[in-house]
Image (cartoon, rainbow, N blue to C red):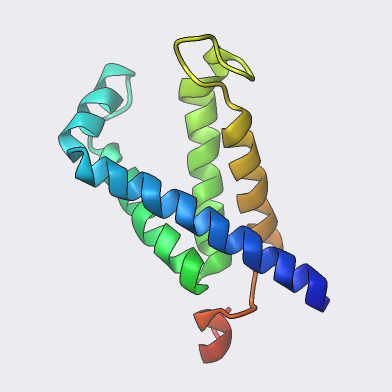
Length: 132
C-alpha cells in the first residue's frame, strides 16, 4: 500500500479497535450477567455473551497495537453481521424510536472488512515481529 493508504488504514484500525475495546469493556463493567440475560432473552445462548465480549475487548486491544489485524477484523466483521441480522435489522436502517438502527453496524462492518482484506501494517506490532 502507498503511504497515504497505509496511514488511512492505520486510522481505521485504531478507531475500530477503540470502539470495540470500549464495547467489550462496558459488557464486563456493566455486569456480564446482564449481557448473558439479554442474549438469552433474544434467543441467543447466553454463554455466547462471554465470547462476544472477549472478542471485542481483546480484539480491540489487538487492533490498537496492530497484532493479528486481518484475523481480528474478520472476527469483528462476523460479529457485526450477526448483530445486524439478529438484532438491528428489524429496527430498520435508522431505527424505530425504541432501538437504534443498523447504520453504525454497517459502517463498522465495512471498516472491519477493509482491514481484513487490506491489513494495516503502519505502527503495528505485527509488522515489527514479521507476523502481519
